[in-house]
Amino acid sequence: DAPARAVGFIGFAAGGALIAALSGVITHLAIKRRHVMGGATAVMISAMALGFAGVASNIWRDRAAISNADVALARRIDEKLSALDGFHGDEVRIIGAVEFPRLSWGRSLDVSVFHLGNPDYAIFRKLLGRTYDVKSMMLSPQPCAAFPEDGSVFLFEGKAHVCLNAFGAFPDTGHCVVEPSTGVICAGHDAVIVARKDCGEWLAPGSILDLVFDRPGRTPVTRSISYEQRGIALFGRCLYFAEGAPSLFDSLSVNQLDQDAAPQTLLRVAPNEMRPIRLSSGD
Image (tube, rainbow, N blue to C red):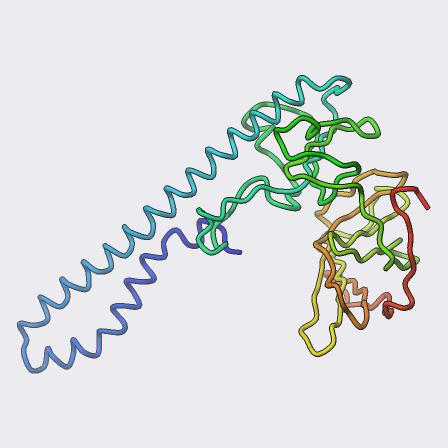
């Protein structure tokens, strides 16, 4: 999805396309009637200006509405955290995401600071001056209600958790495999999880781990974990999350892409070679 700044000046592109489309017509008419040039040029300039004003003003208005909603949500979360017994301001985990489909412009506009997988919730630091470490999670370690309902903010293993959406119990999946250099890889409908022994350095700067699900007669689905993603210490492991796996796939390929090396396939397995592993029990 393109950020807001990438589409905010779409009016210029629309006007430019209009000029390009009409230039041939205008040139042809100008040869026959020179006085047409002035009027046609004025029409084109007006069309470009109207296109820019109409599209850009709506984008900036909606971007402002989303920003205001983000600020309000950050303040409410901070209030809940301040009232949470046992929270000492160290680590906060934001679970899930909020969306504004009415303002999303076909998902080509930034939806929210609180989007899924945000590696840096700087809004708490820059707006509220908070120093706690905020991380993103796709699943909750326990059932929870959607914020701001009771039970949406809680402590688990000594860390504060905020559920933006309602979640059930942490799901266990039957499709897991161990790759020695990566860890346990579990392909679930709700999330793809890589579980390592600890949260020490893993991927080098610029590296990406691609989990490619080949599907029968369809385009493969790729889920990625980059070196920027931060691990979550949970259930005695370090968990990394990516979007959920397709329900049906022929094989899973684990590919590591490094900046200064050719892509390397670490593993390729079929679903029947994978087995159940209960991450929530520390198995």
